[in-house]
Length: 228
Image (cartoon, rainbow, N blue to C red; front, side, top):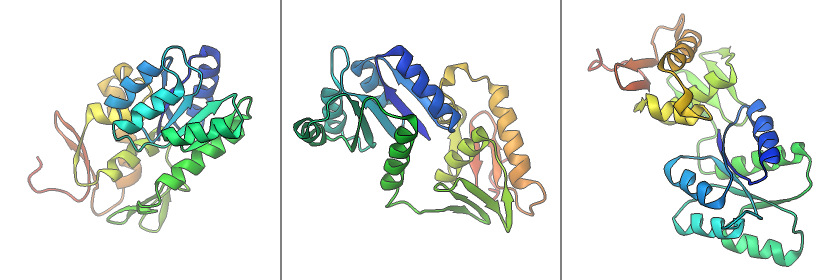
């Protein structure tokens, strides 16, 4: 799961990002509304955590602009305002939920998970490819009748591949979806993680599901006779 955190308070942003990363989220941080809009325009996010009081373009204006551009990404707004009028203003611009400062990290995490569950109502609850299954709600992975234990990074890679089953996912896109800063990801680091994932998913199976497309990326699904 990839989250965009738009927060100008560096200390607060650092603490929130660290906490979310420890829970298995990939987190991009934007210190201004303008920077947040730019990141949201070029990257895919599962959720946006947006501070109301930002320098320059505030959270309401950012939320309004994102919705005007057609973004349906769930938005959780952080605010010190707690009046009914303020909540109505925020909801009218397209925010999905509010969390009033100060708050406990456990509550933030619960709100995020609730929004993610709500956004997946129209999606299949369990992803399946052949005898491989991934349940986003419980993060449980099985192949055949056996459970597969994955690290948070391996799970994130597998989820991206399964949500794009049958398609070739480029190395760049995979890195962007799984790492906080894809520019720091070396090719061999991605290869190592995919290699470990392939061992756990395909070892002992009659049909391999994870395939390397040379010089391009990876594909998850039954073997394609056209592939080398």
